[in-house]
Image (cartoon, rainbow, N blue to C red; front, top):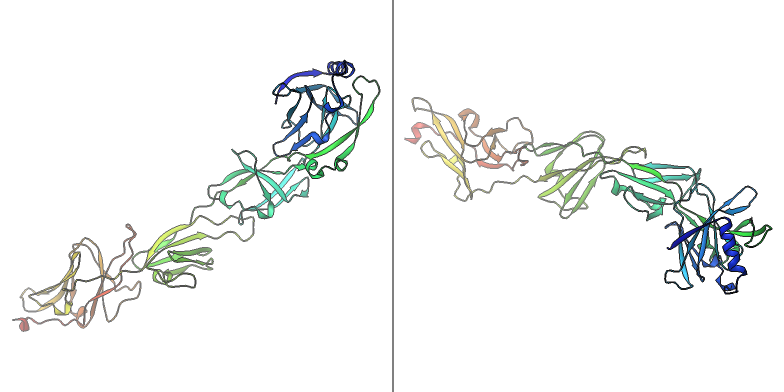
Amino acid sequence: MNIKRVFQGTALTAFAAIAWFGDGSANASASVSIQDVVFDEEDISLEVQFSDTELMAGIANVDKKRKAKVTAWDVYEPADGSNKGQAKIDLSKFNVTKDNYIAIMTNDMTIPLYIKVAAAAKKNSITFLNSTARISEFKADGKSIQEIDYRRATDAWGASGKISELDFSEYQYQGAALYVRKKGINELSSAAGDYEKIKNGQVSVIPVGGTKEVSADVYNIGSLPGKETKLNIAKQANGPSVSVDYKKGTVTINKSLEYRVIKESGTTTYNAVGSKEVKAVAGLLEATETAPKADTAILEVRKAAATNGKGKCASKWTRVKIENPKELLLDSSTKDIKDATIEQPVIISTSAGAIMEAGYKLNNKQTEVTNLVLTNKCEDNYEYYLGSSVPAAGDKAIKPIRKGKTINIKKGDVSGKNIYIRLAGDKKSKRWAGAWKQIGTNITIPSVAASK
């Protein structure tokens, strides 16, 4: 765009009159009409093709009596010095809430081409539903609008769409400030060459070189995009706390939380729970219609979205790695504790080395066995249980054997029982308790006399 100079009032009239009544070098083909104009309502500009040494454009003031007056003209010249050019007229300074008029002419014209850009809406209202991340309604001057433009605070305009199809959930992760407006209307393009459709009355003007007012047609080419309305999209709340019991192998899902289990083979999604529920990890890993059984998975828990629409959206996911209890793989040389003697304890081992030693303790006189002695020989904490079968989760009879420690079990408590051990769960390292492994069967306490 080349804007070379500005002509004021009568100066333009004198200049145009000279061109019109001069030596006849100008000709009728140099005039411009509505068909030479392209309206870009998104770029907020007009493009005018002209065949002359200059094109003049000015903002026209149209009073209540429909009299049009231009007090200042911008002059555009062909960029290459020829008599053919294209003028791009910036409309960004317009007050979009008012009707705006533009007058366009060449030196060969006595009456300008008048173009109207209709007023856009003065007031917007927007209803945004956080729970669905969608705009449910957008009104401009009280009228529902179906299609809008939107942008982020740092973006140029460019994104648009039908309200019913726009999903803003991507902005909820961190929150965002968006700006929304009614799209511009391009009546010029819609006219598709039938310019009678967009004639919008007339204005009174005095032709170049004339003294009496005449009427000039006005073309309503549409309207610019409406006023901007700020839309603040709230940031998702952080995920809820999830009570994890690594020792018992359970997780607690509180009321109004929804959860899902992410396996390599698929995802199983569950609805929000109506009341607090304690879930066994082993059960969560079982096969479902959408995902086969798995040894490990990720449990994701979040607060469900509000059901009233305007309430909060769903929170972020809290992620917890879950896994099926792993059974100890004992070395093939490991014996059952029932084979332990007073003289020879039994060593419980895996391929990584000894983990437990089981032997017997005598009284001070060395005449009677008083205890079964279990010693943790490794750097991990273990648990043990005495009974006829593996215990239920949370059984109070489950006891710890901490790393490097020795415990003494009274012979009356262990006689006739089975002994089970497992790797203890650890909250700090987020390690789940292992599966129970039987290492002693129907224990019989040996006698000192029999061993001699």
